[in-house]
Length: 208
Image (cartoon, rainbow, N blue to C red):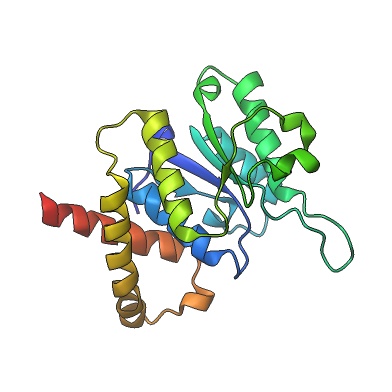
């Protein structure tokens, strides 16, 4: 895998459970296909490292950040999940209180239903969230539109091209996994990223 620069890295702050996997995979593909690189706490595995320290390093080293606040519902113990809002707060603080490079950060805030966040984190009133409706295709497009607008890069493909390429990739994915003797249900974050990165690089080389 390539070593991305600060201006190319996108920090992903979202759930990593099985139910969220289709959204995460669409998000990762969109990031790579648009010419950027995803990073997350799952990118590293050091048993002696603190998880919060990993997250801070990811935020510090990334110009862009995606924050999904759609999973704040209570669990079996009637307690809400605050990890995603907390990490979004760290990103927001880095942008406003950090170094010169931090002040040019861009964030995308996802939720399932538009403006639902106002009921549980009203301090964010006024920000422009994006609703994904638990639809991977919506995630694919929203991430693309945000990266295009924020970066102004002319190399970002259009949504029609992006969706076509992603559908082709999904068709090939079972064969790729079989060749690598990997299973989708137990696929590591870095394994999927490497598969997507190589698939996108191969796709782009065909079109040159």
